[in-house]
Amino acid sequence: MHLFTLERPPDLIAALALGADGPATEYIAGGTDMIPLLKDELRRPDRLVALRPGVLDDAIEIGARGELHLGAGALMSEVADHPDVRRAFPLIAAALLASASPQIRNMATLGGNLLQRTRCPYYRDAGVSTCNKRRPSSGCAALEGDNRHHAVLGGSDHCIATHPSDLAVALVALDATVHLRGLRGERRVALEAFYRVPGDTPEIETVIEAGELITAIEVPGGEALARHAHYLKMRDRASFEFALVSAAVALDVDGDRIRDARVAMGGVATVPWRLRSVEQALVGIPTDPVGYPAAVARATAGAVPRSHNAFKVDLMPRVLLRALEIAGRRR
Image 1 (cartoon, rainbow, N blue to C red):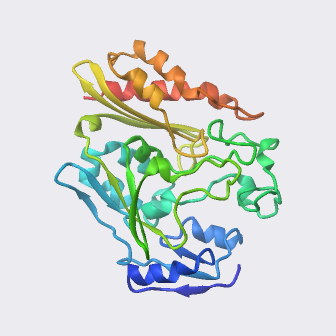
Image 2: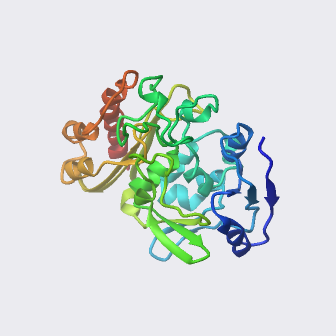
């Protein structure tokens, strides 16, 4: 393992000051993603800043307008089990419970989950020299290699690695915003805009700047969307596995018709993939499975399958259709 200096700042301001040096400094909270990367020397910081409990906001609160405030330091397990989250934001709770394992959820923070690195095996294998995320301009081994788990949407000739977070898919569907804090102040960014498609710079995955931290996530209130919501995840094994295809669906139903719809998918794109064209096609139709196929057919628009992952183009509308059927039947 690369040698580094470990810092334990007493508060957030001290932590931000330590991060002002730029990429030579990295942050660690639960460590469930960072520690394996350090062991494999995929991350080589000169200084590691430990965000121990109390440094990051870990609150879980429903505001006066029904909005959900989640501190970036809150544990995945705590959020998934929180009664207000289960009641008002079941899509978030379901996505968290579909993630990782109970042991990891007991350690991992929300901020760390949103910033976890791709599970592309070529990125994770330091012995592979052609990975543009690790070594810009070196090439992408997945383009002609084993790309069964890779993206069919949002990719480029430089990278087709999928985004790994289940939570991010649900949050993007629900129009969540992340609060970022640096020494120059705080800013808020829609989570959908927080992630960057790879283009020709796949090593730059988010809009977060050097020295900034995610401090909180805010989700607008939406009780009407809570009742008819579902997170469906297809994977190779029943637990502790990343998505081949997942769908986050929330419907606002008036009588027997859909008044509003939120749809995002995971496991298929380089970022959590919001499907606004599908949402638009769902508005106004009955909550009857007969009307869903025409809408879900739009999900694969622009898909570029590779040699081993073309099955995702067939699987996407099926997963989305099933998620809509389940969400539409909820009462």
